[in-house]
Image (cartoon, rainbow, N blue to C red):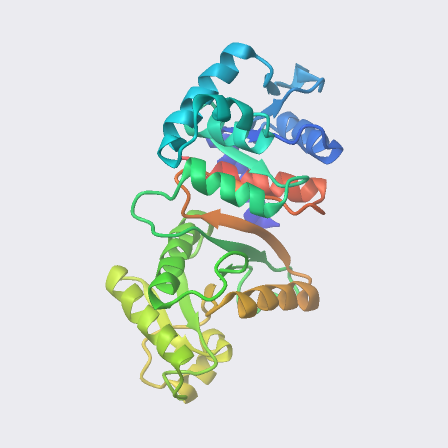
Length: 320
């Protein structure tokens, strides 16, 4: 699709070093070869006999000098938690931890993993080693939804958040998720972000603590982004359709359709993106992590080669 093509061009211009640590998986090796041949990013693998003629770089995890350096880095970052240098060295037998240290040290610019590693392991290692970026309070996720010619009545590209991480965020956390999604939308989308803070109520037409949560989050977000187009709390139909918005919220200054949808909790977000994906055939790219100090993205263990390639393209664009 056009957006992915544009992001691929931007990735090539940046040409960051993206580490795919799960080099024992045949899908990873196939994706690495394709990415390298297309020069989308400088691909880095661990300990593999893969053909490096295409420019794939190999990090040897058995190199004793490298292990000692990485162990020292891990010890310095985690000694406040009681980890000794000896324990740090043992921890490096885990490829996911080794990958995060490589990223932490700047030996690579981004990490894409999760094809054979559980998501919980990927996320916990990223959080404790890479950490949350300055100015952020939590890590969240989004899906980049791209629509074909038959389903783009509200636009070709949208962002849904948070579909994978925060189960029931409070109002401040919801505002933080939306703020991160806004910044990601500016990075990925060609159009100016228009944020809708979704609810089962429009303009507090219903009285409930969940409605209040979205209203409060909207107020916080507007104070942080005074020049952005933001509306909330609002039902999905009003966020997308101008005529519906006029009926339900006539005084609103927002101009639909929204292209960044912020869901009030993980139930609605996860169900929502999968409904859209299944019924419209939309391509759902993600989950894309946001809020980490450096780019890490988690693959599904059922991922295809194309999904690995798309995730690398996204990660390359997140690199500074």
